[in-house]
Structure formats: structure tokens, C-alpha cells
Length: 200
Image 1 (cartoon, rainbow, N blue to C red):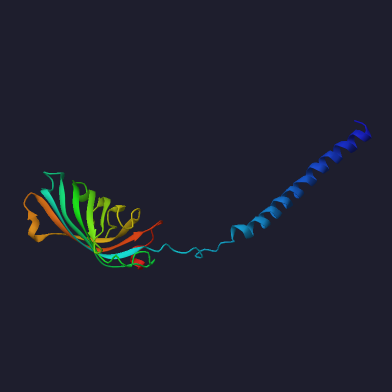
Image 2: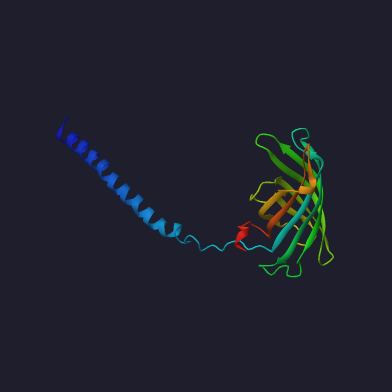
């Protein structure tokens, strides 16, 4: 190999080695420039969702026939009341109560023992306006209320969540299973993203 060829090879190696620090510096500079943008919105700045309505929940559910080991599915009927409502968003201050008529299916699962409901309710608000909602979910002590969506009437499209305390009804105890529940708790009707109902 001639002197010039050796020199060229050395220069070529040096240029490759020189590009690595330059590349690393460029990447670090890019990271430093991008960091402020990523941190532009500090945690906790985004406003928490606010519900259109917050109400006390008071419900009576009846299963016919009683649900249990022998009967895994039954008609569910009764009434769900949203009472003492107030409107944190100010969208519906006139809505203070509604009574929903339950029309759906109750189900029993044996392992572990669970009760669930699904159906459609129709109701009348204190203003005289009619509405309806769809619901589906489990009846568990201290658990979220079954998922619900207002399908017509005031606040149509709102999603509902909250907490429930279902208790077997003593006047509905049956040797063949559970024939009914009383349910107490709180519900929130949300115009978009659902938040924590117990915050209101």
C-alpha cells in the first residue's frame, strides 16, 4: 500500500469516528429541543370532567321467577328513582328527580354468585318530560352502578356512573333464590368523559 493510500484510509477512519460524536450531539440537541414541548402541559392542569346532574339513587328490583341455582335468568321489573338532583354544569338545574320503570332481564352466575341486569327503562322527570335509558351490569355491594346511557329525553346521550349498595329485599326472600333487591347509592350523568361521581 502506498503512502497516499494509507493516508486516505486513515482519514476515512477518522471521518467515520468524527461523525459519531456529531451524531450524538445532534440527537441530544433534538431531545433538549423536544423536552419543553412534551412538558408544556403539566400534570393536573387539564380540567376534570363535570357532570350535568348528580342524584341520590333509590331503586326496587323484582326478579320473576326468583334468581338462584335453579333459575339463571328471569324478568326484572320495578322502579329506579334519581332524587335530590343538582346540576354542577348548570345545564339542567330544572331536573331534580326522575322515576324510571324497569323492563329487562336479570341473570344469576353461580361461580362466584353474581346477579346482573340488562334492559331499557322509561321514565318521567319532575318537569313532566319523558325519557329512556339503556343499562347493563352487575349488582355488587359497593360496586359501580350498571353502565347506563340516556337514550332519549332530557340529557339524551349522557353516560351514567356512580356507586351502589344493593341489598336483598326481606319481603322478597324465597327458598328458590333471590326475588328482589333494594338499591341505594349515587349517580352522575356526564355529557362526555366520565369522572369520579363521589367527587360531587
